[in-house]
Length: 284
Length: 313
Image 1 (tube, rainbow over the protein chains, first blue to last red):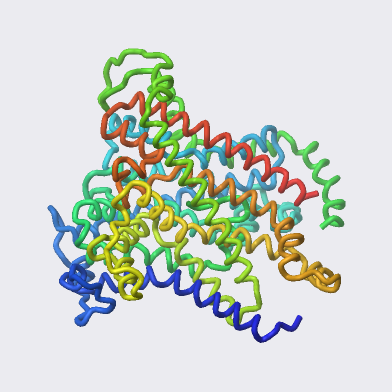
Image 2 (tube, each protein chain N blue to C red; image 1 turned 90 degrees about the vertical axis):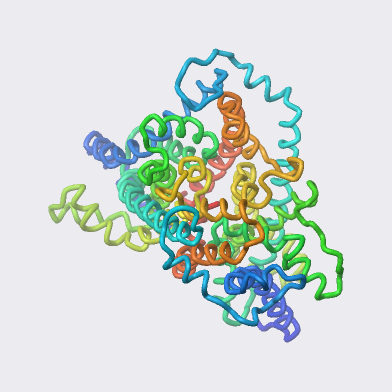
């Protein structure tokens, strides 16, 4: 179908408007992170710093930890976030890839009911779990620990992994296992040696979503953690935003660093996101 | 699809009859780790929240607390503050979901149009979605800053207004500005869903509509929108559930203020339990949220099930 010239111009203008609306806030985050403090709190807004500075990034990466040093706390919180989100993803993906397979390929009683029960858990509002979990973790001495957070996150991310993986297995040809079993594989052997390697793209995409879910989580981390022992990056940023609302440069630097892992993952996996989300699951 | 469906259906049935028991045992073994991980952590709190909601628990320490039956629940309905936060929540849910839907459909149609370098424009939409919620909130709080914020600076530079506005300074304005920040980030999700829906519409339908003399506008209302209805319904419910649970962005942007004008039900629950230490009352509020979310989730699951069936059969 041929399109008129004015139509082509109109849609490209609209696309540019969209790009500006999306990119301006991002640009402002980055510009604020490299603007000297005097530029950020001057009577007129400085759209570009006369003397850009990377001092805040240097401070985050090199200042010595402990106490009230916010830059060092951002670094420790980033490390905590990486550990917690990484471990959560690893556990949930392993457990979810196995469980998802039985929903996709095996027949058993209550199959549909149990699948929807897992999904219902995923939809539970965190505020409904947080009060007793807080009391329970306090009794187990797991408050302010990475293990406590990982345990909690796994219970949310696992149902998600089960759901997306079971949808992915359904998209694979059904005869594969039978062929493998004719060749003498056990059920488990067929799953591990034949199906899982073929499901690698699904596993990767599910891992990305799981990582983003854990990386973004806030309420549990806010309530369960209190020191740089386990505090994650969203908690560190929110806390600092509340305390020193006008010193935005350092918050912006922390925000840029916190945004880098999810943005890179999302751009890399871009063409899988639509499929992953619309197969019946959603992030945030 | 239909050919393979016919061919595999009888075989599946036979397999279920022959290998039934071993298959069920294998399924259970594969599911066991997931059951332990999920229900080991979740089941206890869900049951426990209900128990706590029946007692006047006012400290995180274990101890003896008086049993108060359902009075924590009846108290919710006699709490004037609760009606205020309920109104805020409904307003937030309605306006943010509505705006995200309209904008999301518009952007999805744009990204489905014959743009040059379409992959580039599509990857832009991924960015706000990937930005962590807390960073998004902190960023917009800074943009709205009354003294040094970029929004006032922009309005000044464009000669729209030179008197600085305290965007988060009055209750109703603050609520709307939080909604703008939420819409900026979450419209992307609607775009993903609608884009996926658009790709299932065969292009020859548009060809024949054009031959029949329908304008692009008429084709949108009579063809695109009705065919998108399932995608719209799914994303509408998912966004409504999320908006109903909203907490993070409120916490970081306004802390519920000013004058509790941006407090939502989830935020109010958090305050009651963790600031006022009224764990019993907080648990009752939490259970009411669960009921509301579950009602919405049931609708969603039913639609999903219908979608799955029509997809399979």
